[in-house]
Image 1 (cartoon, rainbow, N blue to C red):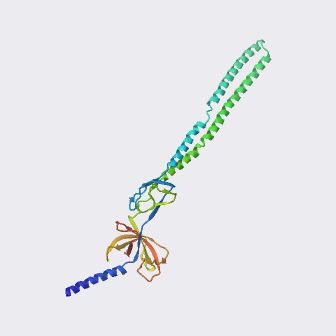
Image 2: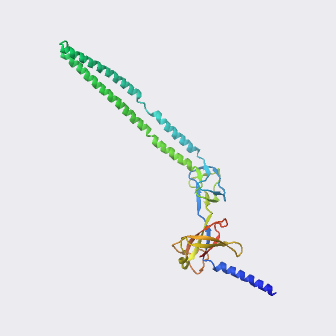
Image 3: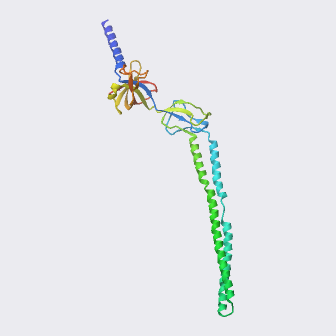
Length: 313
C-alpha cells in the first residue's frame, strides 16, 4: 500500500513538473510560417502542360509547365519573312552605272580623237597648211568633250548615291523588325512556366487544359527546409534579444512532451502591437508585445501554422 502511494505521488510530481514547464518555462510563443511565393502566368493562353502537384518539390528554375504559344511562333515567322524580303526590295545600281560608264568610254574615245586632230592641225599651221579657225574649232570641240565627260562622271556618282540612299532606307526597316523578333523570343520564353524558388508546392490553383490570363495565380510554393517561427515578446524582454542570437525552440511531441530544436533570431520588430488573441506571452498582463522571427531548420517535422515556444539562452 505504501509502495502504491509513493508511486502515485511520484507520478503526480512528474505531471505537475510537466505542467509547470509548459506554462512558465518559455519566454515567447508563436506559430510557424514559411516564405511563400505565388507563381502566376506571365502570358494569357491555354495551359498545354502543367506538372505541378500539391506536396511535390521542385528545384529553382525548373520548367513546370507551358502555355500554348503557337500564335507567337507564327508572328515570329512572319517577321522573319519580312526581314528576308527587304533584300528583294533594294535596287541594283550596276546596270545604270554600266550604261553611263559605256557612255563615258565613248566620250573618252571622242576626246582622244579630237586631241589627235588638234596635234595634226597645229603641225599644219606651222607649215601654213591650216588656218587658225580650224585650230579654234577643234579646241572648242575638245572643251565640250571634256565637259560632257565631267557631267557623265557626276551622273554616275549621283546615281550611286541615290540608290545607296534608297537602299539604306529600305534596310533600315530591318532594325525595328529585329527588335520585334527579340520581343517575340522573350514572349516564347515566358510561355514556359518556370518555378522561381526551391520549395514544395502548397496549393495548386490551375489544371492543364484551362485558359489562363496574365497575372493569374497558378500555384503557391514555399521553401520548407527552413521555417520561421513568428513569436511575440513583451517590452521587458526586448533587452534580452538581439539579431543573430541562438535560442531554443520547442514544439509539441505528444502529450506533455516537447521536441527541442535550435533556432536563430533573424528579425525583431521596431514597433509594438497589441497582443494577438491566439498568443500567450510570459507576462499575460502585457497589452503590447513585439514580434520576432526565429529561423529553424526543418527536419520534416515542422508544419505551417504549428505552434512553437521559444526559450532564450
